[in-house]
Image: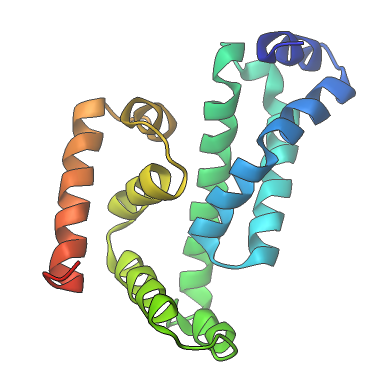
Length: 174
């Protein structure tokens, strides 16, 4: 059964069809949520909330072919809300990562990864979202534009500026 048929069945109340739809996208959803929240528990909670919201609002989905984009957009909004909530509670957003990194052996690859994560955290949210979707999720410019709700030209500009900011932050050797 194709995606559009599953969405149509889920819209009329077929819970099994909705489960299949979410199951098809669960790995992609986890990658996105984890990239935004950097915490497994929070990522799983965000996915649960996105699944619940999408189930309740499924009748509002106008084009079944865009189910993945629609679900991803819901998840991103939930992740952004969680990040805002964290900023009100925690003064240093990297504080959680410092404790979890204490157990990671520090070889060159891990040091570089931490440097990249910290540089990403210093980017503006729009730039960070584009980098995450493009390079961590391997999304196309068109797909990113649909998910974020901006024109492709804007996404290309922001991607260029984000990469420039990362190069400047990390130094010329990157």
